[in-house]
Image (cartoon, rainbow, N blue to C red; front, side, top):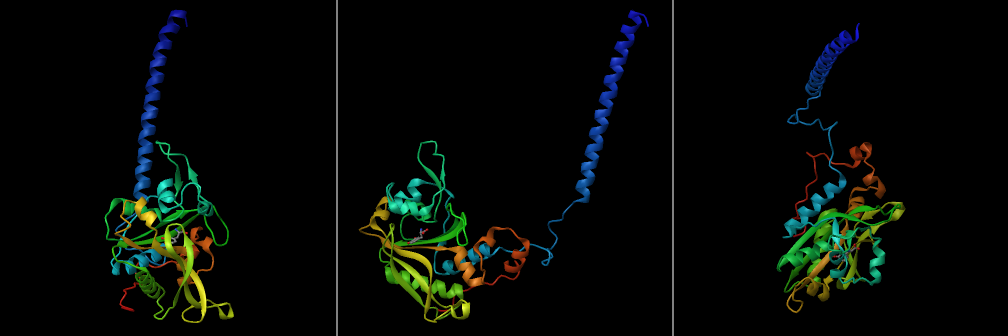
Length: 311
Ligand code: DAH
């Protein structure tokens, strides 16, 4: 072609080229959309269909145990409280009578986070006790709450996982005393473990946020390497408790000359392991479906625990 012819033909070819390109992308888009629609139609799941329980989901023992706890304490007049897993240093430690230099802080293996916008320290809560603080700061007595939830400590071995669960209890009014604490926990343990005459032993102990403080053991037998709960003469520790320290009440804006009460804290994995015979803590968090099928609960077949056992 002559240079002039070449110019004209080149332009015409360019127009043609972009027309073809547009046609190809347009067609590709239509094909893609069609394929997606086809895939969606084929993989459609009708979520309203009933679940085949053999193949379907199971309730994790932790969820089940929390359900049971809540049910028992609700019947005793407790309401459910919750708090965030990321906590301020004040709520997790200081308000619980653990000032910055307190040695008890070291026992918590704390995960520290970057400070909040106002520069204050933040942590993953090391226990559910900060929910006590939040509740006292935001509500007036009488208070009667339980607070189950996730807690975190930097520790990992046979008996520790970096994330675990606790349940916290708090009762504040003008007359509640150690006798009520004892009665409440005895009632709970007997209902939860379903042993009517389960004995509880209150041993003097120390927590910065309670005075006096106690650790509670339940009766058991370890004969023949098998653990049985009941009145058999041997003891197993399951929780910490005490009368809320006046300093804690004051730091949470409650008049300690007028109000008093008790608190307790307990590991949920621990009581679940004891009740359901689960031998290894770490298996709770391995997401092994075979484990869940074995230790999990069918949602239609959950053991329900009305109290009424020992009232
Ligand atoms: N917060 C304690 C812990 O994580 C457990 C605890 C002990 C909670 C005594 C309480 C209490 O409320 O009174 O080790």
